[in-house]
Length: 164
Figure 1 (cartoon, rainbow, N blue to C red):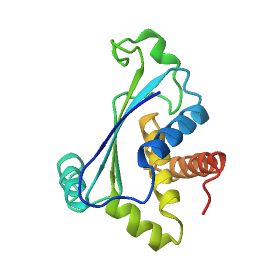
Figure 2: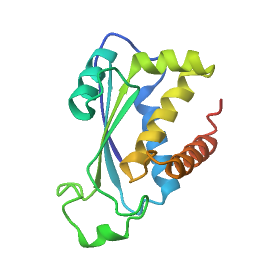
Figure 3: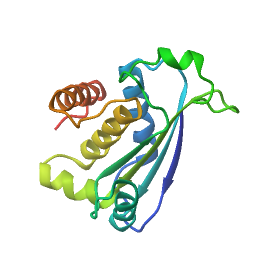
C-alpha cells in the first residue's frame, strides 16, 4: 500500500501523522477485504483551505473535517470483483489500485477531539477510516447506509485498538 502524504499550514498535530495514516489505511483496506495493493493520497490542511474545497466541490460554504474524493465508482460498496475487467483504475507504473484522495482539516481534528472528549489520535484515525470507507464505495446519505458505515468505522477502530 502506498500513501502519498502531504501537509500544509502552520498547525501541527501532536502525532506521527504519516505513520498513523499508513496503519489506519492498511487496517481499513484489510477490513473491507480489498484484494489489491492500493494507493491513497492524503492532504492535511487548514480550515481555510478545506472550506474552499468544500465550497468548490460540494457547494457547502463552511469548513469541514474531512473530504473524500474516490477515483472508483463502486456499484456495490466494498465489492471489488468488477475491477478484474478494468485497467483504468490501476496506476500503470505501480499496478496499485488508485483509490483517491483524502483531505483533513488539522484544526477540525483538534477541536472535534476536544468537543467529543477523546484523543487527537482517535479523531485523526477515525476521520481516515471514515474516508477510506468512502474511497471503497460506502456512504451515509441514507439511514441504513449510515448505520452500516458507523458499524464498520467502529470495527476498524477496535481492530486498531484506538478507542474513545
